[in-house]
Image (cartoon, rainbow, N blue to C red; front, top):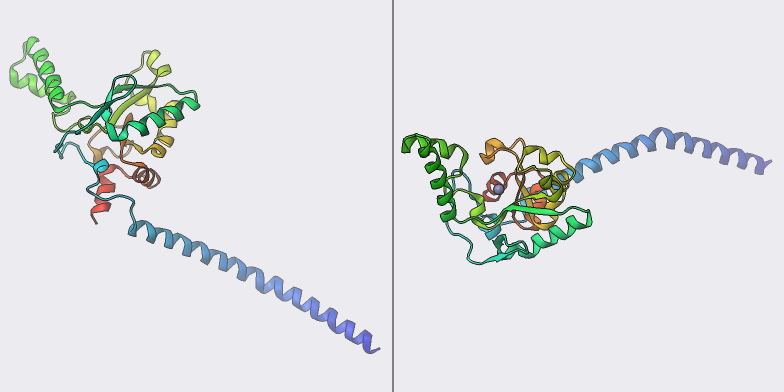
Length: 247
Ligand SMILES: [Zn+2]
């Protein structure tokens, strides 16, 4: 008899425990999970605002845009296999990018790389001369030319850290630097992968007011691997990233 009562009490205890668990423990676990997620998010945000991978005066973060003229042209250039010159410090990373592309059956073509301030002056002079030959005054010709050509000293190509790249399929189809390139398989691959080799798509869609330049899915700019990944993951234009570094 005592054994029966003992069994009954034990069974009752088990039932009560299970009911209590279902009502109390599960919802509690749910709440705890939410709390945990919130904590993780806020600690990540905190980490990001405190520790940015770059420093504002790093050589690979040099800013050249409409408002900022280049101060010093690259000291050491190195010619890539196709003859295009870049700052020697980005040579290997660019080759690694082309190798990674090749593994995806993408054959990158460089359209433009380093361009000196002097060469840019030549481009401007040629444009102006062309308009003058069409009967425009020197002033009119200058205004017309400057609508399409970057002011010497203000092109990112002067840094030796920027390249305009397409792929052979697009190029051989007769296409050049066109916005639609961004929607191609290669354009998308570049957007997603250049950061692993230290590059960013410098002039993104939606950032025109910040960069002063229209969307250019072909213009890649070296900033170093850590900066590039940070900028890519946080959707930051170089101007915005530098502003964060200054804070
Ligand atoms: Zn470019």
